[in-house]
Structures are given as C-alpha cells and as structure tokens.
Length: 464
Image (cartoon, rainbow, N blue to C red; front, side):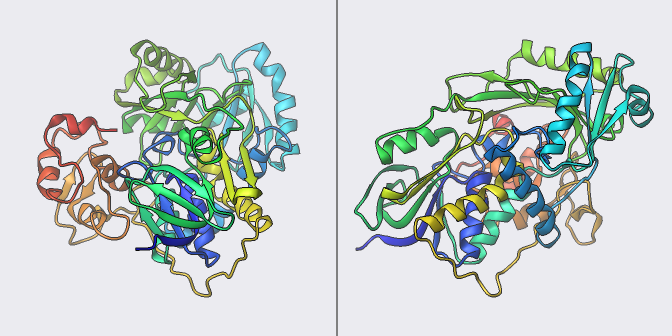
C-alpha cells in the first residue's frame, strides 16, 4: 500500500508547529502534523510566562524582532474570532540599581527603534502611584502599553484546531525516525508509519538540531536547553500587581518577571539555567527559594500570600541570540530552530515568515475561500466561564471552577487529549490550590478508557 502523500509535513506540535500548520492549511495545502509525544504542547510550549510580547527589547533588526512584532499584530487581529483571551495590562520595565537605571535610556531607544513608539519613561514616584505595593527601593522605569497577558495553551490549541477542522491531519506518537528526499518528495519514517511530503518543516523545538542531523546529515546550530523555574502564588496575590513587572534584561535572559496570569494567580520567574537534559525540567529547592525571595523583595506584600504551585519549562536555546530559520532548497526542508522564550508571541509571525520561505521553494498558495473558524471555550479570568452558565452538571475541579461539561467537551473532537497533562492544559483541572487532591477520583472515573495512560493514583496529579 502506497504511503499517504501530503503537501506539507510539520514536525513538532508546539506553538510554532501549530501556527505553521494553521497558516499552510488556510493557504489550501494538505498538511500533516507529526508529534513524537502522546499529546501536543508537550515540549517547550508547556511551560512559559504566558506574555504576549511586543518585541520592544528584541535585538534591533533581528528575525526574532520581526516575527514577534508580526505575531503580536496577528494575534490581536484573530483572537476575537477564535475566542482567545487578552488582558491588555501593559508592562513596566523597572530599574532597581544605579547601573540598571543608567541602561534605561538605551533600552527605551531600542523599543522606539523596534516600532514600539508608545513606550514612555516614568519616575519612581509615578510608577508607585500605579503600583503601590512595589518596594521603595525602586529607582525609575518605563511603560510598554502593548504588552499583554494571554492563555499560553488556548492559543496553540486554537491554531491547530483550526488547521484540523480545515483538513489537516494530526499524528501523535509519530516520532520521525528517518527520511530520504528523492528529488521530488520526502519519504519519512515515523512512529505512525511511512508517509510522503513535498515539503518538510522542522519545528521540533528542543530536538530541532538532532532532527536536522537525522534528515539532512548536518546541523547549523546546537540546542542547549535553558531551564526556567517559576513560583505561582495563590489567587489572592493577583491584586498586588496591575502591570507585568519586567526587569532590565541582560545579554542572556529577559530576567525575572512578576505578573498576574490569565488564570487569576501571580507568578514569579523564570530562572535561566543551561543544562544538557532535553526532557527533564527538575525543580531545584535552592533556586526556587531564591526566586521566591526575589519576588518578595520586589513586592514585599507577597510574604503574606501562599504559594499554590511550582513548575519549570525548557527553552530551546542555541549558541546564537537570534532565531535559526533556514530553507534548504536542495532538499525541500525548512528548519525553524532556536525559538526561545518569545515563541508564544512570535508564533503567528514565524508562520508568516516560513510561508514566505516556502514560496521561494516553489510552494503556491490557494487560500481557502471560507475556512472554518472554531471558537475555543474560555478557561481564563478575562471573560465569563462555563461555571457561570446554567446546565453545566456541577464542578469537577472546584479550585479552578472547571465544570463536568467542560471536561466532557475537551475529551471529544479532533483535538481530544491523550494524557492527563493534555486535559489539564485544555481545562485547568488539578491546577488549583489542592493540586488535584479533591478532583482526581472524579476525573479518574470520567476519563476511564479515554486517555492513552489511565489515571491510577495520586502521582498522576503531578504529571507535567
């Protein structure tokens, strides 16, 4: 039996792969998305700060800056139709030392050069009038009005769901183990069987360099995972910060951020720790204690609030500061690598850039005349939740106010989860103060026979 042929094979179902799949599907291409894990968003995309960045502090003229700016603009243009949340709270860049204060004018100039012309300086007194809980040690800062908070998982889920509803195919547990290009098509060997594709897009995130080596016999960069640990405070702490509170960034990292989340908590993080392990983002008590101490230095009132949870994620950092996106015209492959902490913001813009590169390789678009536009259920605090509507059949997760109806809906359809972690990202079950202590039994019953790995006990609450 001949292997199925697709116009485009997107390898990796993180936020970048999901956005790319949407772009090409809406262009009229026959698309397959290949994900090595049991569910989507299982790599770098499962843990981030959930900020929609403007790109104000990206290197001027960089590919990252262009993709972030374009992604920010497209998110604002499509989010209402897809039902995606937005908290347009703006950000404050804060200087806590004489050295940081001296770097503010150059950073503000960089923001203006990057097209973020509404960024404006503020004195410490002006900032404290808007953020009265800040430490009196604050020296100065500036405002970036366009920075916003979003839901980190609904966005990529929406991108991929729109692709699936318009004809794309998702294959999970489908690691690409090898492939050959015959001059016309790629013949890919995957965990879900062989397939053919006219164009391959490597959006494998933490594994992108190794996938290039596997398919092309070479790599142009090396991934060195950068771990970011986070502390999440109880919902009562959210009132302590109206804006996203940003540090003056360094050459290596954007630094430690304090902000509300789309789910009503307050987070502090991330750390920036390079490691060799591409799978495990271990929590380190000493680092988390230092993170908590730093958060409480910036917002002293945090000392009166409890921590709800801790988490860590990995970013696919490379030896280069900019994104590593490259077309390989001799073998009809585009590598999309080194997409670090700005991937959530840049995803739609990155997809635009990749689509333009594909045209140079011969891809021709025939945009869908009337594409299906799904509307995702809201799981954020930015709009009414399902628990506020009648007939939801009770709460499964009281801490996060997740209804039985929401869980049932998430377990059906073309993007139904295969894992508890996937269900958590679609609904927020088990992510509240009790971390699943009260709802796990009901969830185990409700999900019986519907997840690839059944819930078997308390350890499942800690998955992901």
